[in-house]
Amino acid sequence: QDVVNKIAAGEIIVAPEHALKELIENAVDAGSTSLEVVIKEGGLKLLQITDNGHGIDKEDLAILCERFTTSKLKAFEDLSSIGTYGFRGEALASISHIAHLSVTTRTKESSCAWRAQYSDGKLVSPKPGQSAEPKPIAGRGGTQITVEDLFYNVPSRRRAFRSASEEYAKILDMVARYAVHCAGVSFTCKKHGSSTADISVPTAAGTLDRIRQIHKATVANELVTLNTENERWGFKCEGWISNANHSAKRTTLLLFINHRSVESSVIKKAIEQTYATFLPKGGRPFVYLNLEIEPARVDVNVHPTKREVHFLNEDEIIAIICDEIRNSLSKVDT
Ligand code: ADP
Ligand code: MG
Image (tube, rainbow, N blue to C red; front, side, top):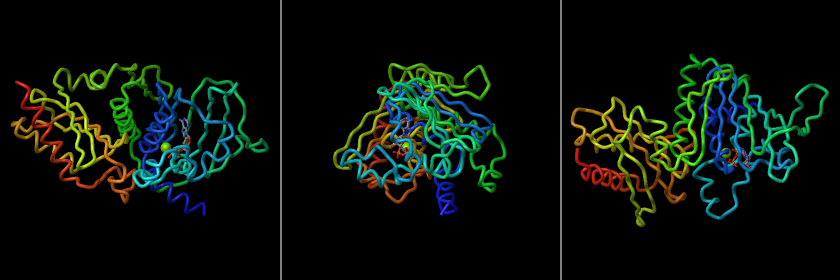
């Protein structure tokens, strides 16, 4: 059974950035307005995220890392989105099977923080002979999740990572993505022991301000907004896209579908083609899109961490978005 769990976990969490993505989403879901990430050895040694969200009740800690433990199935719509995100309540469970996981958390109602450690889905004691029960400790409101020695028991996976700095770059990219999407949240990301953060952004007034905070070197005043909605295909799309004055070597596509960062090579290609007539010298655009699609229309068969996503009427929806991009671009004089 443990082997099965370990294999399943290794499929959900393929690289440190995937673990981090899940932890960021959890922190954001908990209503946090501040999110601090600390990384050691590209996330393989240590991946720690501290938020100021609503915290976890002490009573819920015992089953926190059991599969399918989730507090997010409140509304009926949520039931249809189980398919979308595949696997409600599997992130922490998975991580506990392939890493040493500890949680420190405090809710508003609690007079202290509680600390718990997990292995293979269950509470474990921090030292032999000690109780595995959560321990009261001093702490602020919110949650700190500490993931150590990721893939310690999956040597083949661990060996696949050549360079900590490459993994760290992917982690920074993931933090930067969510930072753009969550303008109202402050983010920091740094290496363990370092006094300077590699990402550090205060709460921003809006998405445009946040994009400037994060991407000021690449896009300055070259962004136009995009906003479209379509009842027939059941989607809404807003975003910020570079105009014809911006031309980079590589496309930056920050794509969120239903508030999850996803990849879509189909959308990327369509966007590049759309820009080709506006950036004749082969330059590439910067595009942030926040796409909301009725959950039932997002492909249920795609595994959430294979971030390539598909949805119903993809061609029609992409065509509308690209038309909108063309509209926005042709309105700007260059
Ligand atoms: P899911 O997010 O699909 O519910 P997870 O395994 O990611 O599943 O998390 C399990 C549960 O743990 C969540 O439903 C939530 O109740 C709780 N949780 C996890 N991280 C946090 C956090 N940072 N703050 C508050 N609650 C959290
Ligand atoms: Mg989650």
